[in-house]
Length: 99
Image (cartoon, rainbow, N blue to C red; front, side, top):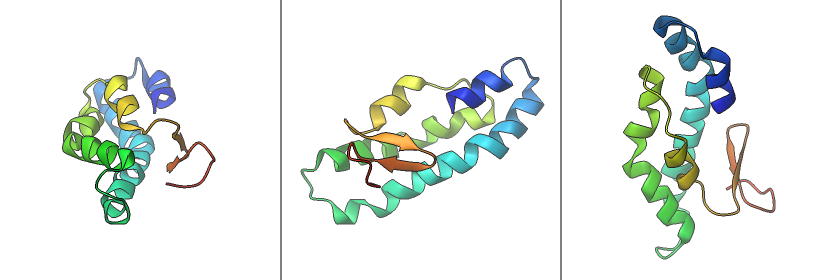
């Protein structure tokens, strides 16, 4: 998503919003769908569940940049569990399995 932001830097607000809707929103939708379905499969003491709850409590703010507000890299970065990474629109564990 930060690469998308670098590419649209300097565009007017209307174009930025359209490009975010086209390019960033599908990624965010996938990032949001995963934690909505996963909590039922995790133990209450799971660190991943804590990260899921963290991002879900802050989701509105996380996705607000789609409406032409600057991104907050820290919030997104802190929401990803240790050892996990984003590959395409999937959250992956350190051993590359889909979370």
